[in-house]
Amino acid sequence: MSTELHDIFDEANGSLAIGEFDQAIKGYRKCVALDDNFFDGWQALGMALMKVGQIKEAIGCGLQAVTLQPNDLLAWTALSQMYVQDENIPEAEAAKQNATILGIGGKVDKTRD
Image (cartoon, rainbow, N blue to C red; front, side, top):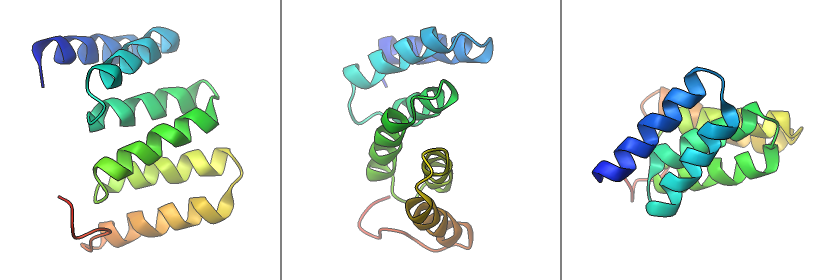
């Protein structure tokens, strides 16, 4: 991770911690614009967007996160929460199932990680 990316991400995390969601989202957007393969940026952006009720965009970020790291338990759990807020229960259950598989030591996609 570049120093610039690291600094922007840290600043966005600080904004999130004190409840400045719009500022945090702005920072996370900069992060993924700088590096579209930055898993932590996508994950954080999705969670921040979910906090402010921008569920559809949050789901897009969550999908990007699980695409980048398909064997990340927390990413699948977050995606499931996003789908629940969107009232898309079948997708929420599918994401939860992937999280459960990972939680018991399985793999979602053996071609990654």
